[in-house]
Structures are given as C-alpha cells and as structure tokens.
Amino acid sequence: MKVKLFKLWDSLNSSYWFLPALMTLAAFGLAFGTLTLDRAAGEAGPIEKFAWSYAGGPEGARTLLSTVAGSMITTAGTVFSITIVALTLASTQFGPRMLRNFMQDRGNQVVLGTFVTTFMYCLLILRTVRGEDSNISVPQISVTVAIGLAIASIGVLIYFIHHASTSIQAWHVLEEVNRDLNHAMKHLFPETLGESKTILKQRQVSEIPAEFDSKATPILANQSGYLQAIDEEKLMAIAQSQDLLLRLKHRPGQFINPKSVLVEVYPGEQVNPKLARQINDALILGSERNEKQDIEFPINQLVEIALRAISPSINDPFTAIRCIDRLTVALCHLATVEFPSAYRYDDDHNLRIITNPVKFTGLIDSAFNQIRQYGRSDSAVTIRLLEAIAAIASHTDSPPSRKALLRQATMIERGSHEGLPEEQDRQEVREQYLSALRVLK
Image (cartoon, rainbow, N blue to C red; front, side):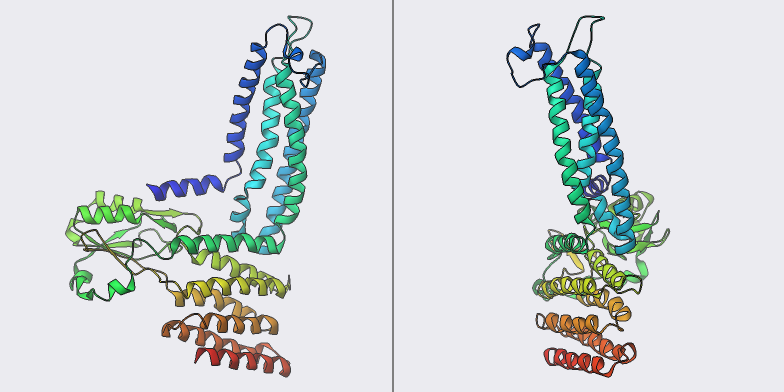
C-alpha cells in the first residue's frame, strides 16, 4: 500500500494541475470566509472598525476586481507560455528525461496556482457586489483581501522571472539531479529488508531447493512498462502466508515486456489466477522511470547531460566535467556502503524472496561506459574520467569493484589512441592512466 501511495504522490507531484487545483479550491474557502466576515460586520460596515480596509463604492469595487481578475488570467497565460518554452529548452539541451525534474518544480506550480487562485477569488467576490439598482452592498474586507492577493501576485511574478532564468542553467539542473541521487542513496542503502553480508556468510546456499528451476512456475506480466517500484512487504506477506519462495526476474528501472516473466514461484502447483494478480499488483509499472527504488536513474540522468554537453551541437566539456565530478562523489560513497543482498528472510528466518539487486560494478559501467565512448576525442574529459577512477579506487578494497575500475581505465586509455590526434594529449592521458594504475594495484 505504501508503494502505491508513493507512486500516486509521485504522479501528482509531477503534474502542473494538482497544486494549482488545490490552491483554486482554497480560493473558494477564502472567499466564503471573507464574505462571512463582511456579513458579520453588520450594516455599519467594517470600514468603521478597520481603517485599512477598502472604502470605495460598488462601481470602484467592480472595476478593481475586474481589473485584477483580467490581469491575473492574462499573466497566468504568459507564465504558462514561458514555462513551456523553458521545458522545450531543457529537453533540447539536457534531454527529455530531465522534463520530469522541471515538472516537479514546486516553484512553478505555486506561481501558476497563485495567479489562478487570485483570478478565481476575484470572480467569486465580484458576483456579490451590488450597486444602486438594489440594496448597495460592497464586501469591503473581501475587496481588501483581493488587493492583498494582487500585491502578493506581483511579488510572485518577480520571483518567477528570477526562478525561470535560473532553473534552466546547467549548474542548477545538475544540483537538482545530484539532490535526487543523494536522496536515492540515502534511502536505498542499506536496504532494510535484506540481510547483511556478515549474516549471509552463516547461511547456506542449500536453502534454495535443488529442484527450484524445474518445479518453479513463472508469473507473467499483464502489462508493459518500466518497473518503478516493488512492494516487498506485500510480496513477503504473500510468500509467508502461502509458504512460497519467490524469485524476482527484474529490478526497478528495467523495462517489462507484456507476457514476460516477472516472478518465479516455488512450489509451482500453488500458482493460480488470484496469486498471479496479487503478485502483479505488488510490482508497480509505469511509463517512465523514477529514482524511488532505482539508483541507476539519476546516474543515467547525469550521464545524459554529460553526453549532450560533449556533443558537437553543444560542445560544452565543462558541463560534462561537472557531471563526472558529481558521479565521482556518488560512486565514492557507494563504494563504502554495503549493498543489499539478494536474499530476503521472514521473521522466522525462512528464505522467502530472491531479488535481482543492483551491483556496484554495474553502476560503474553505467556511469562510465557512454561518457568514455563519446568523450574519447576530448582530452579534458578523458583525463577527468581517469582521475575519477583513481578517486573511487581509493575508497574500495573489493576485488570485483577494482577489477571493473581497472577495465574502465584500460579502455579509456586505449580509446585515447584513436580519439586524440595530438601526441602531447595522448601522453597526458597516459600519465594519468599510470597514476590510476598505481592506486588500483
């Protein structure tokens, strides 16, 4: 249930309609409240009690409210147009996957909601202003609040101009992605449902039945999409209640084809349509990836920004180097943490779930492969990659991790022979490569 709520909140948080819609509903409540205050003020009117409130007549109130409402809806349209332009620029320069970060920008949502809220509030108050043809009624407190909202909207507009010009700058985009990466690392490592390597050393692989492969029954996916999250608590409850052993075939971030194998269930004779539906419900699929349980997603975002920066159309190696620096910091941290095991046990220490966890060596390849391939013709990017490998190697003693780093360093140095035509550039890369080897060996 928690996973589904997180998915729902993520969808709402990535929309431009949810927060403005809530703020618009708040406008109805505010209008009702201020009109109630006006009615409670009595026939004498609040002007005698509050010197700061609106003191004009009905015609002036109607003109003021109409002017504010008209200007707010016009400004809202302008803000929306500027936002769409910013999204287009971001998609071109940083990649379409970065649009998710811009859609989650709370500042833009608040700005749009403020203008729409002020517009709606003014309309609601405007309908209550009556002139000479009937009993004169001017909701003075309500009109005063409308003036206050208009003043606040001016401040919000000034903020939006600054925010829009800042949000499309490379350093700001990198900081947003880096923040998502740090958040993902904080919540995913270590994985609380797994068991530490120390405990696992005391367990035997024989806990997995020898006939698992032959007698397990696959559960097929009933739809396609990216695996966004796995409700492991629900899977554990299913496996424990029916005395099952489940082996997951995918991890968050991977694309699931329809009718592909999601989970293998042992013993297979207990599989039925109800169980298949329950397991499908525990694996949340969506049209795009997110960082909730997918540490590779923000890493791939940084890689994509780096690739676009070193492309011939943009030719901005400094941004690519910034991306490498942030990848280095993240991988240095991940090199020191204990990755979750593939085995999940219930409270009675019975093996219930075998996952397909991400490995540090896989994250190394995700971070370096494409930048290495497309940045071989830039000596600064190539040298910074080797510096990054040396920095990461100093944080890990794991033989598989160091082997993966050595493989990347060797390919980087070898690629410089073809990518760099200048001998002096190749020599500088060679020196940095030898420096990285001293750390790795």
